[in-house]
Image (cartoon, rainbow, N blue to C red; front, side, top):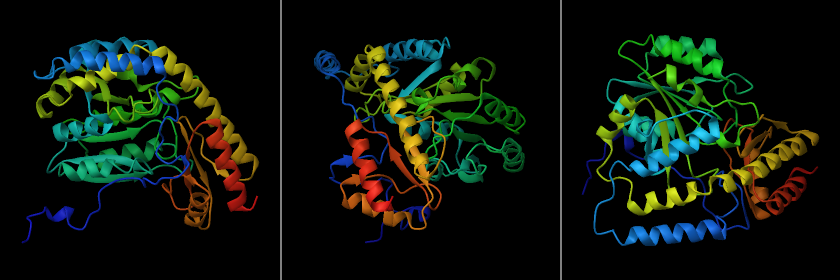
Length: 364
């Protein structure tokens, strides 16, 4: 029997980084620290309470969670937001899909600048949105002249900017985002600019968030996730901040009751421990900076990082280095431009294993 698969999906493999059973997993930018016993206890209690009502559908607009997320962003970034400026979904992946469902589609274009997150073109593909990838500068910053020219030429309905960028770790200055917003304002029919701050909490001191631009730009959406800084990758909670009118557009395309009562309870419980979890983020920033310094001291080229990972190289045969590390029980990611590898920041013991394995494989 022949299945009527969409032609553009024929022969494609599903997205996913390798999931291998090795001692040191440093390939998917997870927070290496599990929730504390206190956080686990609070989650368990709140989920148990939510379980008593699982015969009923959850609050489809999850107003309590939106209030908590707005309060958290206010403390984290100093930007006052109302609950109706917040949206949430099952991971930032679903957030991005909602955005492309609402503002992309046949006859429309999504634009980004490579190298960047490899799922972006898949969101476009899945919503029948044309995909265009411009190029970043050699240092992985955004060349605003090139960006503006691309916007003028392609007239996109959605622009996706990751800051910090994955896989490079590069954060965007607000001036660069403002330049993109100015060009987007001139797009016929309108254009939504999405700043994906999945790793925003890991940015270095003095690096601002695009949340600061929301008040002046109703076509701006700033996406975050609880997977990284909060150590909740398994809970699948992503969210964004934007103008209420933009949020209302996402409410049209979301599936009914898309965020379960259990998910809402887990997220709200974790948010009540935000201060404890952010203290942990500080140690990961320090370990990231130490990793960058160590790699540079040994002659590697390393991209400046505001995330919880480091892109380094350059290798004539990066796969051989990746394979050599894997054979020594260390899994990192073979991703990004040719010749580069990406390592997530793990525990001190895991980073020591990575350093020892790299010294051996690279012959340092």
